[in-house]
Image (cartoon, rainbow, N blue to C red; front, side):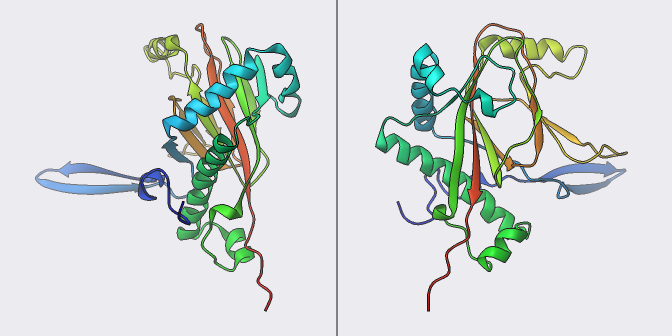
Length: 254
């Protein structure tokens, strides 16, 4: 793979935008309005390749369905989730491991590159002297699978690292129906992830709720607090989480 070439069809499709365009009218006059949300941590949203989903789900099926393997790879002591099983991800196939790491590192590199372009990556710019991030500058420190069932949840928490991510692998069929029922009398929360930053003020929210979809990846700064709400139908809500660090390029000896 060529250096910095994305396996997902180019950088543009992976860049999270904080710009929304709308139109307003005053009499016969039409106004184009551009809304910019630039005053909070950036969350990148994209969709991972199906091959990646298949690899991680195959590993999850093997580990989660085997009590011995679940115990061997149990990761729950390092986490706060009130869920059935949380397991580390053993990579049995070298090619699958290389591919999966490449996918995760690519997203992290794209995130860091965008922060650099927006002049938000102060620590990176200082440590790297403004270098363009490469995949070799990214280290995936931990990754694990969260297997969540009815009434289980993840309380408010944050992660370690420079950036963290979640990828949705399975969504229960009934969760969509329950979500739609909730919208009839109050704001839905069933099975959603919610992020929080700062304090709520007039004309400003301090939270963001996201409805998960299979294949969706959310990448965000590790310090960003978030929670996962319970759902109330049968079936498994499976996700993969990971923490990553950037490492500035090593100085060349002159």
